[in-house]
Length: 425
Ligand SMILES: *Cc1c(COP(=O)(O)O)cnc(C)c1O
Image 1 (cartoon, rainbow, N blue to C red):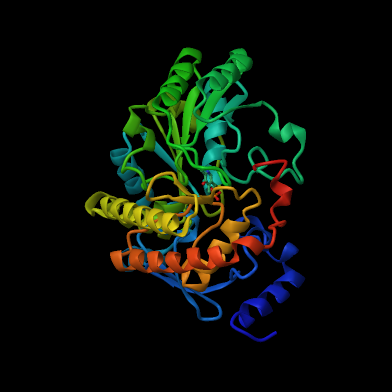
Image 2 (cartoon, rainbow, N blue to C red):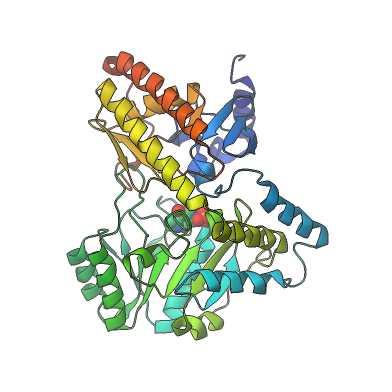
């Protein structure tokens, strides 16, 4: 096949032969509109180029890791400098201590840090530390909340056995009564309560944390001796420069971090308070690449930019401008268009769109106009975006809403998400 996306098509065909399903995980070809590119050639600042040379303003930011722009010169210079000195060595470099000191200095509840690679490593480590600390088994967490892809928390059931999921009880996010019921059911076996900083589940409207829910989670942990874990892997440093629940006056015992911690370089962390220090020292957790020095150099530079620049104020203002502009354009075109979550991490859903056909069409029309959006997952703003980028996104949206309106009667059904109907959806 020739055409605008011929290189991507060719790579997909080759991938089909050598990569199971052609792709796996969150960029699985089954989860996005057919015209979305699967393969990218490069990224710079707020923009991405696909393998067919098309440039997009990228509102996904690599699903979070891009906070200061792709190929950020300062962060990547620190990374490359350390790469020349040594990356994976027989042991860590002094950067590990400096980075732990930097995080302990920035995140109010933290007295110590441990480093790993993926967010799933950090959330799984939180679970192990909580169980070691309490010598109990049960975790209470919200239905539909994502905490990674290990057997204990993966949203897809294939290959998982009941014992992998044992000792877990579920509540509804922001629902105090269901939280209390789950904790009561755990009885004297509660090891920890896991919480997302806000509800950022796929396919449903996002929701701010109800301070009463956060406070109750803290009280229940204090009353039972269990640990409170806030999973900052996705939202960390996009709401505040401290742990997110510090904004509502609730401090966790443990927090898991990843994604933007080193602006796209592989690094995640578990932070904790003194209460959990002995348990954290007692568990055996490691990996061949967990002492890598170059991502730690990148993280130190990322944290410096977090402390010393107005990135958060800027992305918050840009997000508000995007939200207001989209609301105007959606209303003008006559669509019920819901934008939920913090302005720096928006999610778009259309009213009366049960199988997401409007969302898929809108996303495709945005893509055709050079803006990469997601039809059912929250997006991210990054500090490399400018007011001109937001204006470009709004112009694209005006065109996309118009195109959607013209097609609205005859949109094809979206059946590729049917597998989710029993699970996350
Ligand atoms: C992405 C994510 C994880 C898992 O992080 P990985 O680096 O993909 O393993 C855990 N928790 C939340 C909230 C996430 O968004």
